Length: 436
Image 1 (tube, rainbow, N blue to C red):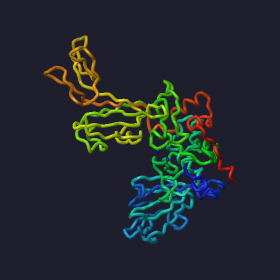
Image 2: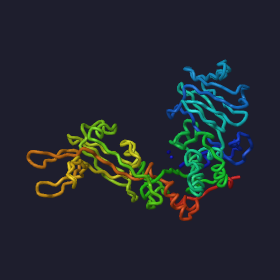
Image 3: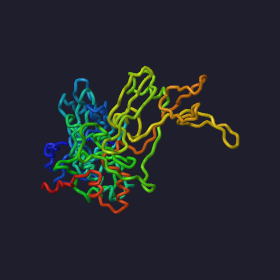
Image 4: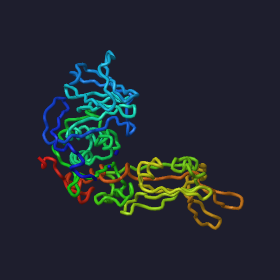
């Protein structure tokens, strides 16, 4: 699921006294918790809404009704109606947002077919003919909401303690959606924020135990990606996304064990299926896909593949994430081989079909398949691959924090500061409370 900028500029409202809206919905002051702007509906990111229904038990601070509907109009204005009767309450002119806050602290929003209760104020406006909604919440409440859906309660306590720092750090570093007026979005592009959905007192206590803590490098919030598993070594940022890399996002090695196995997977392509991949649309029928390079920092993640068609035309894809997205695979840590169907007879005399990675030529030498191109076996017959098989390890981009690896370290007695510094070498733990 799902991004380094100067800390003081990264969140201009860092010293703001934000409002804490606990799971109960009551409101109390919370000194020293910075405001986070979470893009729930962002037209700039393709998540704007055509309509929204809002419900607030006890009514809204600006209207006595407990139900509102929001409609964007073609002229850029925002129409607000009473949610039960449809009576027009107000029309906000183009460029004039409205902040909607529930008197009891919770606003339940239905938009784009999904309904979630948000312990936040919602800043609503119109952008490009669609609703733009940004949740304004304090960092600690944001962390509690994200914890519920990004990690849940099945992970060990030490791993969840570590994760709570990652959640804060992503928000503090947030820059992906700054031009849209948000620090982070609500999807796995940044972190999954679904308000109070699945929120628990157990995870809330985890967040409280690390209150204000986040990860820094040279005094600034870091980029701290996380993933499920990686096959024994994390992928460096340079390998995943290109560029010169990041000092604390290099490959670190931790073999996955039987007790803490990572994800393994396979994906097969016929020649037609491989040729139909969008990344190779400029080619004719693809006859081969070859691995050209691996992560220079030592992991097994693939950083270059080249596809070739029947006329010798080539397309090369570079960086793990571009390759992963182009092929639709769980991770960039994979090997490949070509397979052909071949008949075999069992001891009982039954004929079965097996996948073979090669064949024996007329001189008795084994020849591995390396493409879909048919190869002559005798003067009268040919053999060729039916399938390209990718076999991989891990799930996700493989960069940074591995939840499966972190569990392995926690089982050995590692505490969350050591786990974080293992996956982000050279970083330190900062504390927002030190600023006040």
